[in-house]
Image (cartoon, rainbow over all chains, first blue to last red; front, side, top):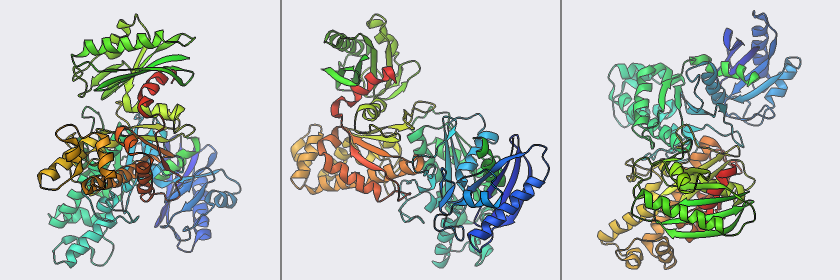
Length: 312
Length: 312
C-alpha cells in the first residue's frame, strides 16, 4: 500500500509518502498563518507533490496528524490553539477531501500518530503495551494497549503531560497545579529559567537565547557547558518524567516507553537513559520488565504514523 | 450458569454462589492464620457449602479474588503480604483444585474482580471504560477498557493507589513518595491522626479508637461530630483522589469511575459526590462526560466478580 502522511504542526507541515511501511519521499513547508483555507491549501499542495513523486502503486489516501483535540470519527479538529484559525471546530478531513478531488482523508491527534509509527515501524516494534512520551514545547503522549492505539471515549487518551507529579506545585499551562508538563516541557523550563535570571541567578540559558525562544539546542549547549540552572531544570524534568511514567505503569501496566520529541531528541540517548533509571526506581511492580528507550523515527514519526492510519 | 466466587481477604473469606449473574447464597468465615494449607482448606469448605446450598444447575467452577500480585495464567498468588503464609508464590488454583476433586479454579486480583462485578452487574453496567477505586485500608483499583478487564503484561494494571499526587510529599507503604494511598488510605490516615495526637492536637479519632485499629466507622463518627482533624484528613483524601483520578482520565480517557471499599462505603454517597466534584474540576478534557459514582455491590463485589471470572 502507498499512503500520504501529513504532520500538521504550528510552525511547519511535514509530509511523507509511505510505501509498504517505508518512507519513500518527504516534503516540508512552513505552516501558513492566514487561517484555515490557507492551511488546507498548503496541506493539499504537499499531498499533490508527494503523489507526483515516484512510487509505482496508487495512493490509498492521506492521513493527517493534528495538534489538539481531534474527533477521529468525523475527521474534525475540535480545538487546536496552536494552529492559527483552528481555535474552533474545523472539518479538516472534509475540507481536505474536497481540495483533493475526494481522496480518502483521515485525521488523528499528532501524539497518537507518532506512537502508532513507533509501534508499527520504529522503536516499539513488537511491543504490545507502549507509552510514547513526546518532550517538546509541551509534553504529549500516546498509548498503545494490547497492540492497538488507545483513543478512549472522547479521544482524550495519552495525555501524560497532564498527569500529576508528587511534590510539584507549579501551575501548568492548562490551569491545573503540579502536572508533568509544568516541569518537563521546554516552554515551562524556559519560563522558570527566565524567572531565575530575573531573580539574579546567572545562567547560560538566557545568555544563549537572549530574548528569542529558548530552543532545545540552547538547553543542550548550556548543559554541555556545565550550566547549573540548566542542570537543575533537567534534573527536575527527569524526576518528574520518572514519576509520571511510573504512575502510568501503575495504572495500565506497560511493556515499553518510547521517549521522543524535540527536546528529548536534542538531549539524546543519555537523557532517555536517565529517564529509564528514574522510572525503574519508582515501579510499583519491581519485577516489571518495563524499559524506556529513545524514539527511532525522529522528526518523521508524526507524518509516518499519519500515513499508517490508512491501514490501521 | 452457576459459579462460586470467593473473596479471599486478610481477615475474612467471603463466598457467594452466582446463578445467571445473580447472587443466590453467601457465606462468610474468618481467614485462618495458620498458613497456606489452613487457608486452602477453609476456602474449599466454603465452596462445598455453597455447592450444597440450592441452585438447580450444576456449578461451573470457582473463582477467587486474592489480595496482592496474581499470575492469572497459572492461578498462582505471586505475593500477598496481607495473607499469612502467602509471602512467597503459592499455587492457589492448583491447590484448591486438588482439594475440590479437580473442580475448575481461576484466580485474579481482588480489586480486578470487584471492578469486573461492578461492570457486569453493578454501578458500571453499560459503561465500557471504567475505573474502580477501592478506598479501604489502602487504595486499590481495577480498570475496564473497551468493555474488558485490563490486566497488562505483568498483571499489574489498575493500581491507582500508587499513582503520584501533586504537592504530596508523604511516604507510601510501598516506599515511594507522594502516592494516593499515602493520603487517602485508611491506614495512612490513622497514622497521620496518631502523629497529630502525639504532637498535641486533640481529635475524636484517637478518643474513639483508643489503641485499637481506627476503623472506617470511627472516621464516619468523628466527621459527624465535627472533628477538625478528621475533616482535614478527609478533605486531603478527596483532593488526592480528585488528582489521581484526573491523572488516570488524562492517560486512558474514562467514562465512569466507581468508588467503593470499606471507608468509602461507610462515608457514603456524600463522600463520593465530593470526589466527583474534585475530579471534574481537574479534567484535562473539560467536555468529558466522566462521572464518579458510588459502588453498588458493597461487601459482595469481590466475591461476585470472582464468580464472574468463570464466564469472562
